[in-house]
Length: 114
Length: 112
Image (cartoon, rainbow over all chains, first blue to last red):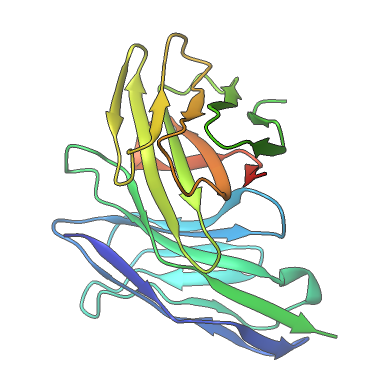
């Protein structure tokens, strides 16, 4: 079945450091891929998306490229800020199936220290 | 402002009690979802509804029930059969396009 695996946290970085959170997936067909962010005590917000191979999603300085050959969708940011501290979820949607639902990774907690 | 409203923000359940979590959206989305989130876990799908008066079980539906009588509303009942209900519950909705889902702020349920 479809699944998402993302690196375990927590990840602790100093402000202005480079961020990479790894995400790999297993899916049939051609899924869409997403990164969601959850700030403490809140729901999830869509951070970025990519709907086909080689697409690059970007938002708020974050980027991720849909790599079909390596089945990956790693999240990167060149210079993190304290306000980026949150839990990040990688997800896929294989809407060719009957459910069309999102399948989430377990989340990676990021803490950025000043 | 359009969005998804979940209420209450915090809820406490007594032993043997059924409780209902509210989810309302004014985004005119057809599809709505309920997820459960436990510490250190991803989101697990409880129920979803693609259209009014129809809903489907997700991966962990046992001990939960839903209804979808109106497009805007998708309440979740946590029944007494759910033996471990303590969790953070998230409601989402979607137009179906690329299955981008929009989430509410969540309800935290605890057992007294």
